[in-house]
Each structure stands twice: as structure tokens, then as C-alpha cells.
Length: 238
Length: 238
DNA sequence: TTTCTTGTGCTACCTAAGTGATTTTGGTTC
DNA sequence: GAACCAAAATCACTTAGGTAGCACAAGAAA
Image (cartoon, rainbow over all chains, first blue to last red):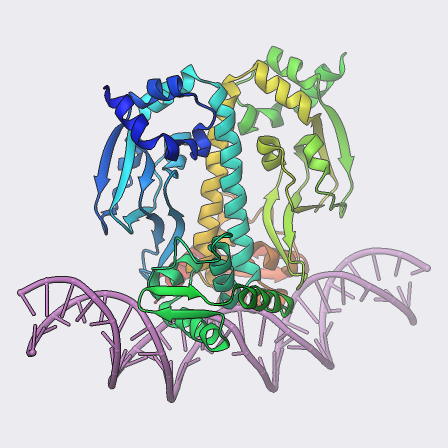
């Protein structure tokens, strides 16, 4: 069994969810995967070397990774993206080959598939049809970023927190996922605020009965109440 | 003289500054320009129809156009991009063909070159080398948006205003350009604030002697003082 | 068990920035 | 010229959210 075949058996499910490379058949995946190798990064690993991502491109196969920014002077943190299974990084470096000044930290023990940038670029040249995928994916990221900007300007912390919660509720189970086991501080960094303030708002929601909270745990108690809360919040913008 | 030749004589200088299509020679431009026609839009024209940009793509040849967002409830405005000569729009629509929910307004009488999206897409298919240009250009926009997000989270209004001014000072003349003749309200929208607050900060800068202000006019009096002001502001972040 | 660390809950306080109202100014039009 | 209007300048006031500090609880480690 070749390495590519091994990776394919292990990860074909995950890879088929990977928007950027959607539409590849088994044969094409095997050809492509020959360029990859697997890496395991343990929880709390920080990648602060911006150079690293000029040379390798990664696909997450399990665990969470946050991409974040730190203010040089105040040392405040802001989480730009919370990456999970089937997400890729770093797209910026891939597209223009310029250093991307952000940091990465593993929130779990994670596994990634790694490919050298050169190999990915030459694969892309051999499969130019994928340029289109990359363009529409870029557009998606831009829309997300633009949406973030609007949120930051138009919405207050309470609304942003509510939206964070609502956006991470699984439609089927009505349960919070991806961010349910994060400490208040990490939630704060996701919306550009501080632990104390986030806690203040969470207490408020708990009091009203829409959520329950424990150490490293936020649970949805009443999704409809939560949605209504968000609705009211938005309506009351002046 | 064909229409394309006419446009080329008129705008070759401007078009050569257009990053997205850089590297085209005269012959290629003539071929490309055959798909374009010129339009004039008068000052204060608003384009609130999101559909419009699904079907045409534009290059600005003179004047300024703001791309902005309005909050549905509070009706607050935020200017996302201030587009000028050699800028293009709407990139989002071009890349993924999905409606882009932003508004446009002409800050001057402007002139644009227009091409139908279909024609542009088929030109792009005939010239696939330009996919790469589009990708690195997308990366640039993403970096700008990400930088905006960081600014909004880490910097206060005073810093954001100072940065807006400094970023729009011409290196040679040391004079403010592009935004120098905007009313306080427009400046406020550029940094996500309100007229009154921006005015408060401008008064402060005026008092200290780094700028002078008049109706629809901000002028740099002492660029070094302004830079130092920005420096101090950043240092004092806690 | 004890010790240590990390996260939470809560208090009191401070300040930047938003709000709303009024006056003044400068430029345009009639 | 007078009349008008948009922008600017100022004021007093409110408030969300950041800050600092501390006690306490839950786990992990020793």
C-alpha cells in the first residue's frame, strides 16, 4: 500500500468536505496525495514563525486550530479564524507568497496533511481548473471578513456574543459545537472583547434561562429563547 | 478609429495602473477593450441594486466611488472601500457570482469602463494566466480586510483617525489627498464612527497644530507632528 | 492528602465614545 | 442684498465596555 493510498483510506471522507479541492475522483486524489505527509501537533502548540507558512500548506484532518493576531503594544489577542477538520491554511501565503503576520495555536491535539508550497503550486499549474475553485473560495473568505468588519462596527458585544453562540449551534441536535468547551477568555478573543465582559453577558443569559454554564462549558438550554434574545438585541440598536 | 482604439488612446495610462490586468501589451489591450464601453455617472449617484453587479464589471477611470454598508436597523453607515482611478468593482461578484450586499455612491462625477461579466469571464478563460493575477489580487484585498478587523479591535477612534490621515498623505507633496475634501461625516464613516466624535478629535489635532480645518477641508500643517501623535497614541495602548 | 493552576463569579470604578440639542459659520441661490 | 442650507463647532449627558482586584471552585499534579 503506498503512502497516498494509506492517506486516502484514512481521510477520504474528510477530504471530500474540503471545498478547495472538491470534485477530485479517487485516482486524482491518489495522484495529489502522493505529495502529502501527515503531521501531528499536540495541544497548545504555538506557531509564531510567520516564515513557516511560506513553505508548507496544510489541511486539518482532526482537532481545532486558532489563527490569531496579537497587538504588539497592548498584547491583546484576537482570534481571526477557528479552523477545524477539512479547513486549510495558510491561504494568504499560498495565493501571493507574502509572509502572513498571524499566529496559530492548537486548541486540541491535531492532525494535519502537509504539502510543500512548490508542489502545491505545480499541481495547480497541472490542474488549472482549480484556479476557479480557489477564486470562489477566496471570495467566500472575503465575504466572511467583510461581514466581520460590519459586525464590529454595527453590533455591540452582547449581540456579537449571541451571534457567536447561535452560529455554532448544530441544527440537528440544537447543541453548541466547536466552541462549547472553550474558556470565557477564548470566547472573548473570538469577538474582540475581554473575559470579564463576556462573563458578564453570559451570566445575564444564564439568568434568563437560555444557557447553562460550567467550567469550560457553555450549553444551550433554550435555543428559541436565545434566538429571541438576539432578535431583541438587534431591534434595539439605535 | 475603432471604439477600442479610442478607449486605448484615452485611458492607456490609467489602465496600466490597474493591477488586475497588468502586463497586457497594446495589442492585447485593444482586443480586451473591444468588450468595454464607457459610462458617466454623476456625483451623488447611488447604486443600491445589488443585482446590477452580477452582470457588469467596472473599471474607474476618473473620480471617487465609495463602497459602503448600511445597518438595517440603526441606519448607520460604514464605508468599506473608497475606490478611485484604476480601481475595479465588484470583485466579489466576479469571483463567485453571488450577490454582494453593499451599496455604492459616487463622491464625484465619475467615469467608468464597463464590461459584461460573461464577456470578462470568457476573456479570462481565453487568458488563464490572469487567474494568477486575480488570486494574488484577492490575497491583497483579504490582507486589507484582515488589517481592518485588527484595527477595529485594537485601536481606538483617535488612532484610527490619525492612521486614516497618515495613510492618505502623499509622500512627495506631504499633502492630504483623496480624503482631503470630505466632510466630517464621510471621514467618520471611513473609520466606523460618528461626525461629532471625529470633529472632537480633529479639533484636538488642530489645537496641537498638526492640521488645519475648514469647511470640507482638512489640511496637513505638520506631518511630523502628526506622525508623532500617532506614535504616542499607539504607545499608550494599555 | 496537599498544593498548584486555571477558570469563574462578582464588585467597584473609570473612561472613551455615542447622543442630542443648539449655535455659528460659510457658501449657494434667489 | 436677503434667505437658505449644509457643515462645523460646542455643550451637557449617558452608557457600554474595559480594568483591577479578589474570593472561590474545579481539576490536575505531586
